[in-house]
Image (cartoon, rainbow, N blue to C red; front, side, top):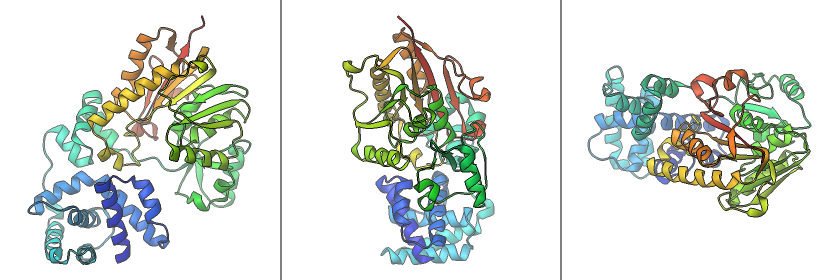
Amino acid sequence: MSKARRVALDALLDITERGAYANLCLKETLRGLPERDARWVSAAVYTALDHLLYLDYILDHFAKGRLQPPIRGVLRLGVTQVLYMDVPDSAACNESVELCKQIGKGKLSGYVNGVLRAICRSKDSLPALPQEPVERLSIQYSWPQWLVSEYVGQYGSAFTEALFCAKAPGMTLRAQWPYTTAALKQALQERDLVCTQGDLLFDALRMEKGLDVTQEPLFLEGKATVQSESAMLVCRLLSPKPGMRILDACAAPGGKTAYLSHLMEGKGHIDAWEIHPHRLALMENTLRRLHVQNAHPIARDAAISDPALFGAYDAVLIDAPCSGLGVLGKPDARYAKNDAIVAELAALQQSILSVCAAYVRPGGVLVYATCTISHRENEDQIRPFLAAHDEFEPGNMDDLPASIWERAKDGMVQLFPHMDHTEGFFMAKMVKKHG
């Protein structure tokens, strides 16, 4: 297990100090590890990330002086084991000491041992949390204070706390046309893989346990893919039908493009744009694996206008670049963003929305979506857009389940993890008027 702890430390430092994406970092890091070790590393890293600010709050009370990144990483990992994992205190302390030696910090091993053993002795009397609501929520649930302040201002303290208490949704699978949901469900059950119907969509199958899709024949053969219910819902807002011409303006990694094709039964035309070459390659791989024939990946900047395409599409989907702060399963996203980055994203979203709206034909549909719950990236984009573009009006949301469209207002609806058991996800539907 010593090797697993070293791997976990390296991954944690890559994510917290060098800005690596947790999912991509762990995918690479876990390659070649025994399954038991890989599960432990993944659990340790994600648990540490999920509680990062609270870990630092505790360490700031017990550790003297400024901690350098490698030692802070060792201590974060050690406290994670002590407070949140099924690891004996003695093992957490001893292995952290060994970890210090492995990374060439043996002189500090006694210090690390002392800090961790002091925390072990004080587990039942750890430092009290601050009384001020924003500061308390920030530390207790490990969300940056600027973001907590924004959410409390938008939704209030109680709602924000309920949001932070929500668990990340589990894995959801869906079939890819011409394979059917019924056939997928039967195939899973025949192999004793327990699944239930999605809370919001018949097409979604929620897995009772996670699945290594890289080894799953249904996935590799293109009969099934992993997709959240929220991502599927936004595709349905376009009312896609066979024969339509659709633009997916920010399409990578291709899951929504593929589901649009599924809903169109492979008939019609989808242009799928992506500005970044590496993400374009991901989308091409996704569409190839799922045998999607009617989607056309194109390297293109959705923020640059092309008059030749004005009025060319029956429906346009803008799954806008966003902060991603509605995805609870990606805790590293909280720490990688700041207020200035969100402001930059909001400006880009505004540009893409304005440009791509021109590509909708009269009577056609424009759908805007993000996987965040920040008003700046959501409602504050749509209301000014509608005020400036009187050729558009809010659309109805009859394509969504009643529990969702009943909450819709002015063609907009926000999904919340603690209410809808999916990611925090915003959707807006607008229709271009005739004439």
